[in-house]
Length: 508
Image 1 (cartoon, rainbow, N blue to C red):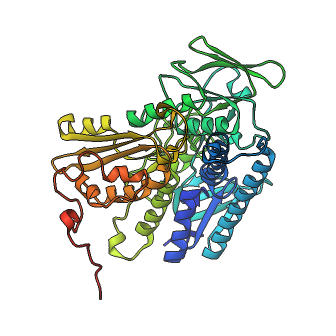
Image 2: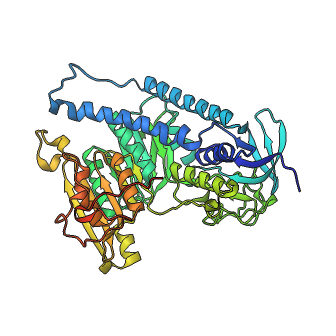
Image 3: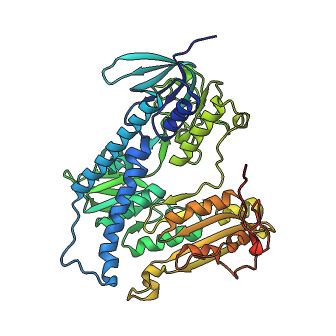
């Protein structure tokens, strides 16, 4: 029997790699090594969810000061200004503290962590080159690839030279007067909303008719309306950016494939998509040409034409002792998804409990939020996807559109008040809830609980059986349609319908 240096080597110290490493060490006493080439925490902590939420919160405060407070009788007594460098300093300090917390977590868990560039030597050996050029080989019985992803620059003259990525957004020292955001996904929408609310003249460039086209049409169209009302200039049907030029100073000009030109931008932010960090994982291998450093051909791990690592539902690659999880696999690229996958993989690999022998993560009914202005929450199937899966005749949809009570006292025309829109997508004779989509104030906080309900198989009748919390926006989701008239079937283990007694816990 071969003696390896470690029971498990995790390549990548982001959310998924950290979760798998710590679970393996703490819960199962395994000897674990984590290899990270930059800062602990990965995209989420350093250039993603965490600093993004800080900026969203700042933008939310700015929006309240500019648009809301006077309606509630408050006066600023003068101009309220933003000290952007101070905000950046505080945000960066917070992120650095989180890096330290992750490092301390590894120490307490007994996980060894090394920093450097990882390269496969064979299916059990990884070579690490540190910042000083020192090379060390480590052997692991099992190896997890959790290297995440990175922003993608599309081809075009001057694009990479004159643009910043979503990573680069967090390096900005000052708030740009004119900002152009290119992209139609959630990152583009979020950063455009932040820049606009903080005071930049903001342009959003989308290839087709609107952003978030893969989201349910009700919420994506409503968000489009709200972005226009907020003052974001949306350039539609552009087919993308042809080239970006500089005036020789700080200003950039964008030339779009549609023929339109946007002049004198201070910052051009490319958020046209992300790619997995396999670009640095493989060289001279037929499934991923023109890649380097990790040398996947040395261990035989296969990737897709788009360079995602191929895994099955248990995170297994085609090599028996090598696994992959998180954004590098391209399936539900969300931080909590990678964390769940990492923990479940550790359970399956190292637990002696038979219940964990088939442990895996579920990629169905994953709630998520776009931190737009206003925020957008979603879980499950869109209406078009539900129609495709179940047949339109088997799908019933409930919708609602209203102004949040927050805007009730605003002395503006009703049509000018920000709107909340909601949709329940139900399927089958029992009207099982297969999709919930919400745009509006508070949607970011309300989706978690409804996600639990959907995972448990809630029907429309189950939602109706829950007494509404008033006055809230979320009560609309449990009072839609003619309340209490949907088929009286429950997805619950103990039905809550028709005033039934609540379920009781199992006692010893």
